[in-house]
Length: 242
Image (cartoon, rainbow, N blue to C red; front, side, top):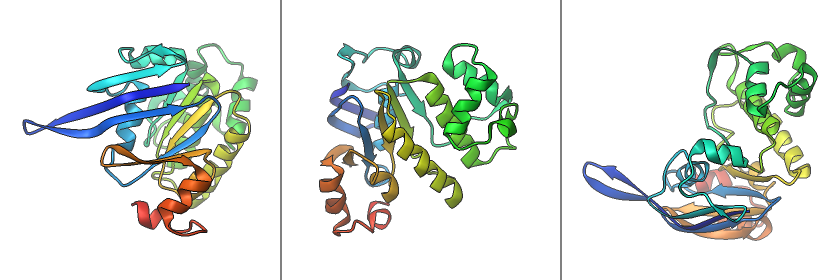
């Protein structure tokens, strides 16, 4: 279980302190699929990076499985089972897909095991297992490979920062299928996704709306989605939230 208690993050801008995240308290129960949404610049991605340990919060506490991890590094949090997938996956020249999956797993995966993870994200393993992580891969391919590394790590908490960014419609449809499968087969894993997309919001168990650095709304998908769209069928999320 993840618990955030009074999390605040201030950034310095020309000598002035600006509140990016403001006194946020949030609990994510085990085995939940939570989507955090809200206006651009509201603090969503910053909050996810604070949880992962990429950014250090100014004040407040973070607990994971009952342990205070506020002062733990990104490496220590990763070892505890917190995984983070960036908006723009990192490209590693000279490193193959098999290499990065083995690094993620922390052990020498067999080729067969690595292929299984690629298959889970809809990639034909024989076409990718020996490919280099470089500019020859599309944004959609990189996103799916990054998700495969999260699966290979067998994390307790998976964080995805706007996974739909920079990919085409075909890749996005595959991304939705992957998330739907992850939701069905969570294996005790909690999932937090930062997104504006209605189709991702529709997968959520719970939705958290963050605006101006604060939680504006929070609750089950069935309650929150119609509220933030203003329509019973919840069809206008992208227009309203961007």
